[in-house]
Length: 149
Image 1 (tube, rainbow, N blue to C red):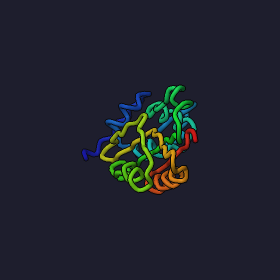
Image 2: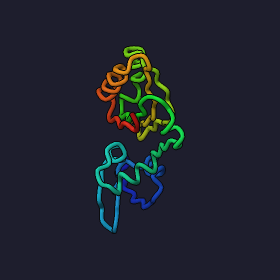
Image 3: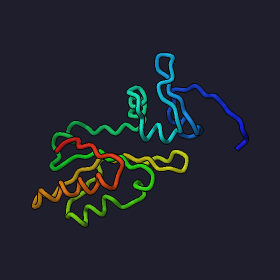
Image 4: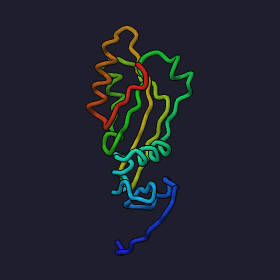
């Protein structure tokens, strides 16, 4: 807006998300990745950037939940419009699966949503419904990682 560039050097990823438009990630004295802040957080390419972003968006479940809950555990990445759609409600209704949100958050970087949820899907009387629900979620979101199941 003002035609001013400010260079900020920080390890505080929350500061970058809240005040920066662009970011350059350095490792070993070299720029390993750069781009718009949202794009770097939503799609980190370099291993070092992936590590930084994963610490910022850390959603680790306690071991007892990972091992003892029935059904499938998924980590779902929502980017942009998909974070504002009722994807999980749709699968619960359409496929008759129970959806339990175990952990999650949605952040807004600029005006764009970036969210991660960890969910449990169960359908004790219809095991094929869970697989169909996972496929539906894959089609409607940015990324789905099966944590267990």
